[in-house]
Image 1 (spheres, rainbow over the protein chains, first blue to last red):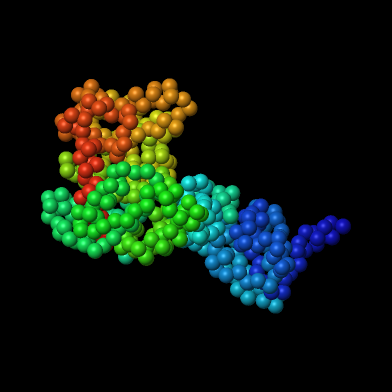
Image 2: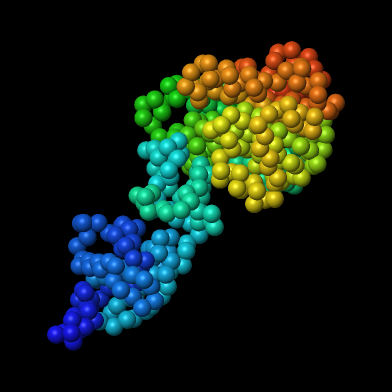
Length: 157
Length: 298
């Protein structure tokens, strides 16, 4: 019986994907925000699997996101670094890991977060996207100079 | 094509060069036809007296002309047109655009959509670089900027002139002193940025305790709407009021600056004092803005 439990623990929580992207080592509890950052919504046609708070050897708990039939670009995955810098990206082709890479914090993020300054020109109907420089102290709005410090998840568009 | 959006776009050398040029203009050493045939579009979506008139005066003194919009109600933005579209259109009519707008970042947006140089004449609580340049110019007329003790007094939270000046002074060897009502302190992110540049910032509770050590008092208006009632407003403003009695304890060469308009911050009796430089400061707007126009339009 004990052996059966172990087998169950070691089994896959979600099935393997044939082609697509697996985002692993997401900080525990952040998978839903990762999905939000990637712009994946309820209207996404492809199979999307999310596992949260999975025990991990290197991390206390981790989240995993599997997205079938879509290979995320570097620009897309680097946005993840803003909330989960330890995440790793596995590009899957025919059930095999074709490419494995880490995420790098981008120097500029566009159209990802809303400027918290209600007076900022980006919070109007002007035809522009929010744009922030990533600085050591936080995200700096290039339009109004506001700096978002701390957790950015509450500001994701 | 060069825009002037933020004082942060300047390094110290660029500021000094522009102020040197303004100094030559002040001595009438300039070509009065330098911008002949050029048109400046003056788009002011917020009220202004000094900034607007001094820009219009500056282009006229250089032989150019100006076309202007004086409020949102007086242009197509009242019909719902975006600022981006307004700028695209106006940049076909003029050789440069000066813009004041109630939204922070509006001038940066304008620069992105314009095909001609854009100068920021104040965007919300954000930047006001031409005011800062004339503030620095006025200090330089009385003393070298390096080595001074400058006190920023009044509304330091929402006052864009104080923010821009503090940023510019961080390029010099200046000790910054702040005096403001609770809740109207310098924004924490700005204070951090200044400290990172090595600027010493000292907060004070009483103006009397520092008046004898200051070289420059930069006074800004405290807006009545920041306070719950008139009584608390008058209570606070009276403790920051600059009076002849206060200035009796000041250094001989102390100067008092104010971006104007003033309301109750400076006693009118100070106007006759040799310390009072705020009207000269306002007049300096013309040569400084002439230098700015020549920099971006020639």
